[in-house]
Length: 330
Image (cartoon, rainbow, N blue to C red; front, top):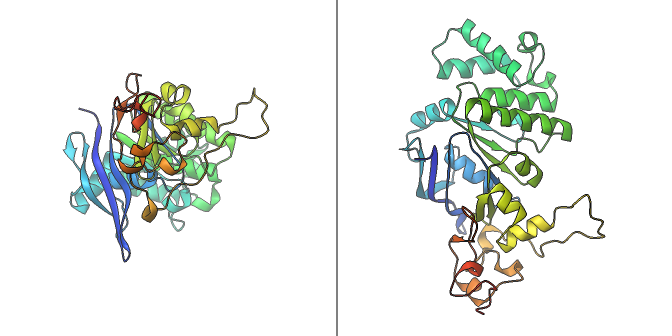
């Protein structure tokens, strides 16, 4: 059994104009110590998937279907207090903007100590010592003095390190990191990536890394799931997805990444834009932008199919035997 199993997850947002489906039939698993990178354009459903897992969907969002199992226990549908204990003690979260995770009125020490004592049977003195150790672990110098500082007294990179320390307070087995490096400069990005990689190595922490940055994915992930319009279009080992992408959308993403050794006047791009939630077309959601689309793509939605590489799957009719590998039935 995997550490986390998500099966047929569907997240809906009821509105006056109908029900909007933000995540549609998403399934995946993650093992201890593994990094799963979830990549895609803004609005693809990446963050909503993460929020659904940790029980932080904002109303009127709801899990309409599917099962989320953590350590073999179903966690969607749990009472709020039970989910809060799991979220703090076993599942941590790192969000894009550290200022949304830190209370500007409290010192970082108070916030760390409160989190530690909530999930651990420690005295205040012991919790403060643990907080200092965590700040040292995430690379904040003079932690014994900086612990009494307020969030505004730290740089953006240092605040993000504090957020990582908060996520580690109870030694979680899983961390959901949603764009953890997006607002940081390149050198700080590299430091945060190195820190997260060390967590996986030293603590066997599993990480779901949500980002639109393929460079971050290439640095950290063991497997990659590509998301488009609320569904996974491709999932597989990092090297296979990057070096040999199969779904036309993934191929377009990979082709749009510049290669330093090649001089080109214009990068290839994917025509059009991702549809809004109320405009998702029938069949494959990518079909209006896909140069390989056939009639079946416009009327019938594909499920995951083997691509020929072990562990790599793509939801594309190109890989269905009824059509053949050229996508045109030949």
